[in-house]
Amino acid sequence: MDRYMKMQTSLFRIGTLSGPPIDNPNGQIYLRSQFVRLRFPALRVQGGLIWNRPVAVVVRSLTGQETTLPIVDVTRIVMLALTGLGLATVLVSMFLRRKTSPS
Amino acid sequence: MDELSTSNRTSQSGRPLAVTSPVNAIQTTMEQFLSAASVEAVYQQPIREGEHTIIPAAEVLSLAGFGLGSGSGSPDPDEPERPVAGESGGGGGGGQVFSRPVAAIVISPSGVRVEPIVDVTKIVLAVFTTLGFMTAMLTRMGKEKPPKFQ
Picture 1 (cartoon, rainbow over the protein chains, first blue to last red):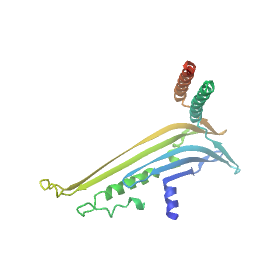
Picture 2: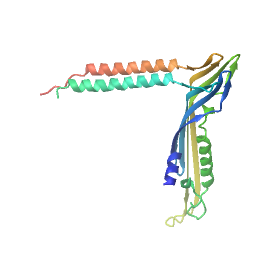
Picture 3: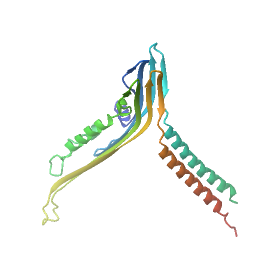
Picture 4: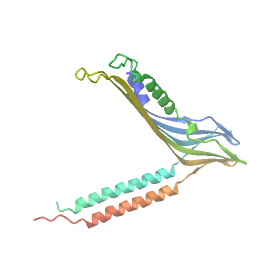
């Protein structure tokens, strides 16, 4: 079981990392990123991918108050919306075609 | 990493296959590659300009793959005129790194703000592609006639 869990965690892993604090006049800043690690192990063929992306910026003021500023990937959101629009068009056209057929 | 151990693999001549070292090299390379998940991979060094500091942030996608193979042969007793034996091996690998800017973190005396970086060219191309696809789908749907029944 332990070996199984070890292999599972080594094959696919997702996590959030936080960098060292960066000093600024208003306090400290912590940069957070997320990674997805996928590995394809085999005896003589190995491969893998790592996807790193920024997640948020944590601002800690001099009074100790923490504020999290999320990092929004606008380009990705628009691309996903366009992909969804295309898929919706396919589904609607299939639905209308089925509805208009006499059978 | 037990599945990567090749120390017990031997050729038909009884000699160990010479793939243990390449496998170890591949394993080491993959370990180094997969350890590239870090904050430093996403956020670049701060750029200071007067009272302002800018930290560029990007998403990074890294892909890599390796493979190798080997084989050996012994003389065929049915073909005594070809007493050839030997072993050989080969391998290869490749990888790609994609990087795309996502945002810029601006630190100023008034505070910290995140400025998104929008790839307008990519979005415009995607919009035209989607519109073309939608137009083609709707045109095809309008041209189709219902099947005739006899």
